[in-house]
Amino acid sequence: MRRPGPQTCEAKVDGTWRSISLEEAKGVYAMAPKRCPACHGAVMLTGTLTAGAPRNLVHRVAHTGCPRDPKRYSGTSSLHPRALT
Ligand SMILES: [Zn+2]
Image (tube, rainbow, N blue to C red):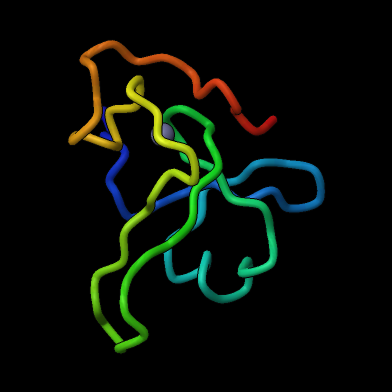
């Protein structure tokens, strides 16, 4: 079973959500809407502009039902209240 790692997110391209890397999220899909693959909440990227520095996905609106946000995760997965569709 492939466990979704922290290094992907989803971008809406031509009306379809597709899984992309964070490099793509900062590059070719910089202008596309992006969401969390787990809860579908809108996300943005953090991190420095230094090449090779780790980047992290951060929910624009905090959500306790997302395992991708372990600091806030309540232990029960649920869709984001403002999930992007
Ligand atoms: Zn999430």
